[in-house]
Amino acid sequence: MTSQPEKMEFQAEARQLLDLMIHSLYQHKEIFLRELISNASDALDKIHFQSLTDPQLLAGDDRLHIRIDADPEERTLAVSDNGIGMDREELIANIGTIARSGTREFLTALRKSGEKSAAPPELIGQFGVGFYSCFMVADEVVLETRRAGQAQGLRWRSRGDGGYTIEECDREARGTTVTLRLKDRGPVDEEFADYSAEWQIRAVVKRYSDFVSYPIEMEVEREEGEGDAKKRVRRVETLNSLKPLWSRSPAEVSDEEHADFYRHLTHDWEKPAARIHLKAEGTLEYVALLYVPAHRPLALFDPHEAKSKIALYVKRVFIMGDCEEVLPPWLRFMRGLVDSSDLPLNISRETLQHNRQMAPIRKHLVSRTLETFKKMLEDEREKFQGIWRDFGALLKEGIYYEGEEDKFKVAEIALFQSTRGPGLVSLDEYIEQMPAKQKEIYFLAGPDRQTIEASPHLEAFRKKGFEVLLLTDPVDEFAMQRLTEFDGKPIRSIERGEVEVEDVEEKEARAQKEKELKPLLEAVKAALGERVGEVRFSNRLTDSAAVLVSGEHDLTPHMKRMLKGALQEVPDQARILELNPGHPLVAKLDLMRARPQESRFADFCEILYCQALLAEGTPLPDAARFNKLLSELLVAAG
Ligand code: ADP
Image 1 (tube, rainbow, N blue to C red):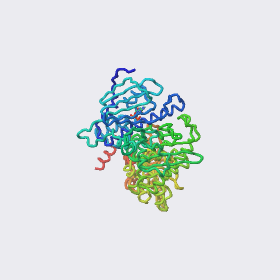
Image 2 (cartoon, protein in one colour):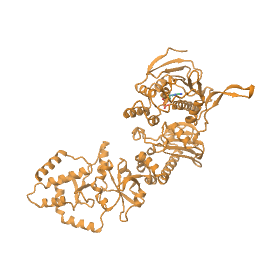
Image 3 (cartoon, rainbow, N blue to C red):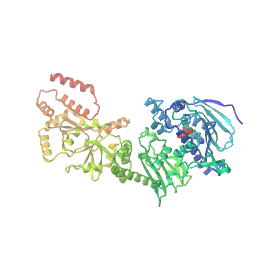
Image 4 (cartoon, helix red, strand yellow):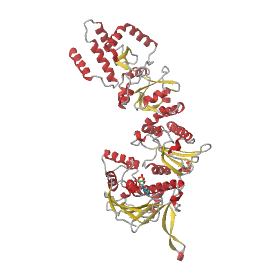
């Protein structure tokens, strides 16, 4: 039974992608075959998985395989599978529309980069554009499919020019066949490769799809016999070696093979920055193959993507592509798979949560991952710094979320910017360099390095030669608060509470000054009223006249700004205004205070307070008033 072809339009985004594929100067056109094989392999995974609970679905056709048929004369190439197939709704939803958020992001990124025609391969690679990549090499694509358990076949056909047709067709076998009518060599197309040639197909399959766990078969023609008995025969050969890469011994798998496998798994064109391939034996039996991507993906901090996405296999059978139980969310940038021999095949997302095998696997993987990073930090510093730059902000969430033991393991590999120089330091390195009289680990947080470096809080630390960690990631202060100490040294924010930077004489001199100028401190407090909780002399300042300090357990201004940015309620906490007893402005203020007819004392105090707010990056509550006060002061000075 057949029907009239029905004309359909591609969804706008699908059309854009197609357009890009057809006109792309993309150099790796051969990836279209990898994409088709990977779709076929997914379709076989699906039917295999469903047939575990519903064996009828296979209807006797249980040799799951992929088949390639090429015809160099007709210039066609077909990839078939006896997988799950698609019904009409699925066909329209999957092939005519772009359902995947990744692809949508790809288009957005591309639009942002402003270059439609020359999409950089890393960009294409990061997203894996799937089926549409056929149109890089084909004038016309015909897809015939029959969904398992259904009788009617469907034919989808498109020239990639905005629309496609769907019609019913007869199809004996379950599954899908995608047939490409290959483009002819164009006069300017120098990179032309003939994808109907056997050697070419073999090379591409070997390169990208060797580890596919179903046989990829192709009929080939060979010469057999000797002399007069020589004849040409056709026979079916399997092009891939089948054995999944992860089940081989880790020492036997080459870097190249890993790169190919990683590409297959993630569609990321770049080689992974690091890998962990381990076989656990004993009480827990599983194989894990984890990769660290070469670059931070665009959606890393997207709250909808905040789950880890490791594929789960049970005894080499694919169970799910993004199992969030395998790794904690702060390792969600890792890609790869876990293949367990202990989990039941019918495990589902729901039952996974309560499975007793999963928690120890996760714990084991977290510690192996951290060990690997630690070793890299020791032996391949440059490489690890690259990973840290891309994923450190996420890894630090591990300090916040992990238990007492693991938070220190994460802290051991953490790298920070510091006042020491432009490079990154670890906490161990920080401690190694501490002068004998320094007892604590100091940090200061802010929106960026430049702003933090301008902070008056740093003055005394600079003078003393005490290194201060400069923290710019939103997670930093929360992580530090959670960590509280490292290697027995308390960790403290230098804008909170009292800091110990003075020696005994300096301390005594300040106490003396505080006694002498007590009336000044009281007068400033009286002038500023509720705006400050206390006014005292500072041991942090050398150049600035004043600075605002938070109470020991209060939120820092940077934390407050972040919480406000996230529309969180922020408690009002009175700050401490610290004055620099050695600053001429403070001396002047004391003189003014002593003059009975002086009316500008309160204005002066307010200006000083506003300057302290500005120095820490806090917006002024009333900027117009500050301007007015300053203008009046300038007029009076002139
Ligand atoms: P991706 O495979 O990355 O999801 P594609 O554009 O390659 O993206 O394919 C879109 C969807 O079409 C697939 O997710 C799948 O549901 C369906 N599909 C493609 N090829 C096949 C096939 N051979 N058999 C069954 N379904 C397929």
